[in-house]
Image 1 (cartoon, rainbow, N blue to C red):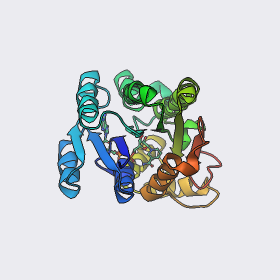
Image 2: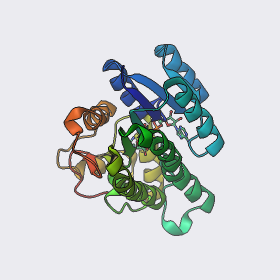
Image 3: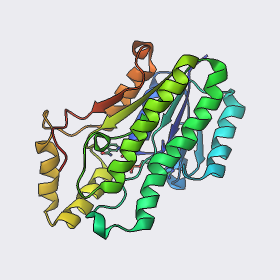
Image 4: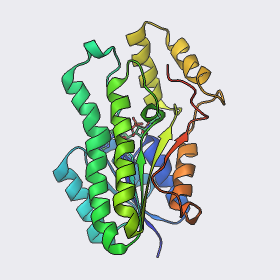
Length: 253
Ligand code: NAD
């Protein structure tokens, strides 16, 4: 039977690229996303996939989505806890507590709810692969982005801990750490960092490339290819890693 792949925030951006990569490899794919229109567009483009509106921070919504997956497939072979949000940009003394909490909730609490279910279904199977989306912001300090960097470091803590808990049950757990990925999300991040720092958007955009050894941005397809590798037999002995897909970040802006 084809592999069963679950991806959170899979209706657009990096998650959608992951979904399409796994579909191209013949996998069965289930995605959730908080954006109803994006879910409808994804379902229309990929009939036969399981696509549901669910906010990863809602325990009941996630139980509804993941319960449907379990009812349809009986478990999962690959689970990608991918949902994340950039959170507010600004000096720490200016940050709003609600915005801080919202950023931690999507990036960390959502990953917890997703991985808890993955552990519950994968342990009895004695196999499985979990991939959590962290960021190069989970490997460096990141001025003006304290909530996001904090959440993404926490995702790596969760990854390493789950790799230890689940490894003896044949389950591999890794984090991916993309650099700046071309697309609408980074356009928004660049705009908010420019506003918070007083630089032009052009200068912020250039600074991301300056701090990268390969002097390039990343594509969603680059990230999806790495996830496909980690989920494949080629990754059979890889667990507990935080793998950067970033052209080698030398420093964050
Ligand atoms: P994005 O902003 O393009 O959003 C992708 C999808 O996530 C959207 O369809 C959105 O509706 C969905 N989403 C947002 N909040 C959600 C929630 N609470 N529940 C369910 N779905 C939700 O994001 P992206 O650029 O595709 O990023 C995906 C992951 O990669 C995130 O964890 C992000 O932090 C991480 N990441 C992104 C970049 C980048 O440059 N884009 C770099 C490093 C890491």
